[in-house]
Image 1 (cartoon, rainbow over the protein chains, first blue to last red):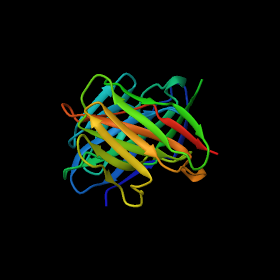
Image 2 (image 1 turned 90 degrees about the vertical axis):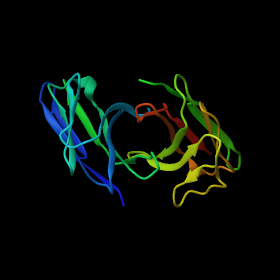
Image 3 (image 1 turned 90 degrees about the horizontal axis):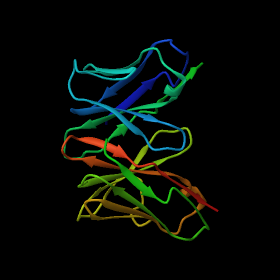
Length: 111
Length: 115
């Protein structure tokens, strides 16, 4: 069974304090690993898709990396507007495009 | 990125009534759409996979007669919660896959409250 574990569950940072969120996964055959941002009461907002170990993608203050067992979302010099829940999901090969989500990391950035 | 819309954004209904939620991909064609449910402070749980022109595939434990899914076109899928009860109150979110680049985009969600 495909599984995704995110840590920590919650993270509080001061503005400008860089950190990383972890996403560990087990999957029969990784087709893609997805990162989303979700604000309260809203649908997830797509951030990145990673496909193979060693791949990296960046968007503004966010950088996602991927190994064979885990992915990291690095946040450099965060701002209060980066506060949200960050969700990680995996997609396996095998005909279905469905995503299996972790429980998320709730990030709070204090000014 | 691509845009997925949902309607309505919020609905309150009485127990025993049926509620229909629409999910549309606005600027791309989606052969596959997904329906999720999210309870407070929990992650997204996949309910069913909806393929255009064919029957939906439901996840284990999801009642297909209670949650009716129709994917009538490449841009529209609907979820009907039949004979809703208070325990069906939740945040329902749809997503659609842009087949060209395997990116999956989510709608803004529908908050269902059953009294």
